[in-house]
View 1 (cartoon, one colour):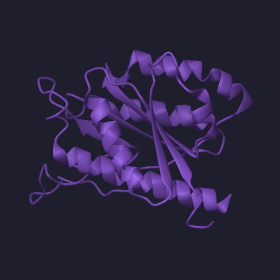
View 2 (cartoon, one colour):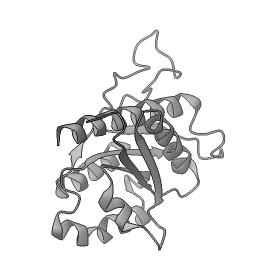
View 3 (cartoon, one colour):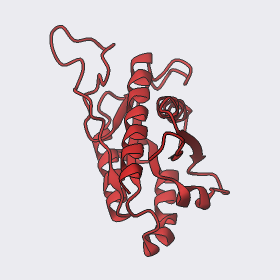
View 4 (cartoon, rainbow, N blue to C red):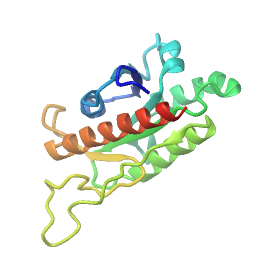
Length: 195
């Protein structure tokens, strides 16, 4: 693959209070920093979702807040709408990854990421993990550590429910999101070059 080859990463997300959208932009920033990567953001609850853009993407990143231990209802609606794509296996062999945010440190976010990973598996996609060691898990650790919530399967972030998206999630979660976006874009380029 030549350096001029472009790979396309689409981030499809739902954001109830703006925190997930802020995180989506940080994932996009990290992916955009990888040479030859184009980024498109699509709102999962937009009536005019561009299914053609998703069909042409090399990678699709899923983002949703965690509500009641699951993806949000609008994001689940997007998942259900994708059944037409599933019937034709239109996303088979695309790269997939996911991220989520909740107000609580845990908030049962793992269940949301597992739900996304299963969804990607049903579509025949190839899931990319964070590839990051957990932070903030020793006496010398800090909430400023990358991957401070210690997630492997996908990106987890935490945003205080009484703070606006310009404050929460905190800067360390945005740095983690950028690193995750970079990993997704690099993985996509490697996968595309091998195809």
